[in-house]
Image (cartoon, rainbow, N blue to C red; front, side, top):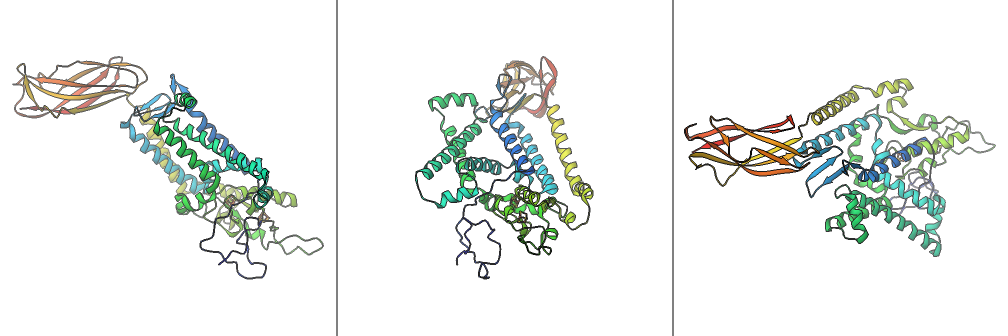
Length: 478
Ligand code: SF4
Ligand code: SF4
């Protein structure tokens, strides 16, 4: 089997039937991947894509350099097992917030997908954003779509070698910078930079810098649309979140067909608005023809809208032959204002309510969070023993001060008549540090019969009684 259309240099979509001789086009099941040469496009949606590129990259590359309370504002310190988020210090015990974050992300994705399809894919997905940056470098160096095709199919001369080396060098530099930045979220980035001067990174740091850099270089430089088509699971299940009111990039068949090139001195009256220029196909980063209907490869980037609007503008026709719209709106089930009201449909309202509840609960939980954690376990080596005429039980107590200032805590114990703390009743912990000690508790032998009794430890900050934790445990009377 062979493919009679060379996509490498063609400006027509491979799905455009029929071939010159009218025979059906054959496609091999094991067809070799062909590079997609994208025509640069300008317009409203292209501007928004760049706004997102700048926004996401400023956040990603800038955040690790931000200082807060004389430390890195956002740092997932794996060695210390502490996560610093501006004024907050999260410990492994706060994994609950990670779960909440994942739930919020999932609901937000459901919500945005139900409203406007693959908005995330088209504008904010790292794969899209990095590919956009890599393509920008490519266009700056090698020229537009035609120039790139000419370069790749032309002679392997010095100019081509120079351009290719420069392009791959810049891609690699950007990828290494991205890898370095990513690791900077887990190791203080200023330390990392100092280590870069002497190339004295730790083994794990070195691995992750190069791993992420290699991954970025491969995915944005070579794999590109194949990641969206074959690797991304979201592309596969997004359709279950769509309904006839979901905004998707659509070609208005009613208006565009029958398509055809306008010819001078010919009767073009029977033709629709589509002039079959294939611009919408040439600007598509996934190499599909939107005129074939909604396809899972479409990442909703809107490049075809910009491309087609430009053509319509030149022809003096109204824009929007390809546009964001819904199946119902296209079928004339509601007008343009109706489209807005259909966005707020029951399903969307349900997602919004759930999202608001989860976000509200998370904010409330964070706002009322006590900056103190206590781990208390019985000392398993000694269950109970008699010391100086009293019964003693031992506990291992870890007091975690999760505030940004050093604190002194007092410890009290209650639950059995005459119970008393023998070890220190006060502990001091540095900011965002913990204090671990063996705590001894004694009870007069006649205070209770043989058995297991509930007792309570109260750990209270001396400067703020609201910062307190009450822990329940047991006391064994032998
Ligand atoms: S069909 Fe249009 S919106 Fe979809 S990926 Fe291609 S250019 Fe982007
Ligand atoms: S860009 Fe517009 S006019 Fe040109 S082929 Fe696509 S839909 Fe038709």
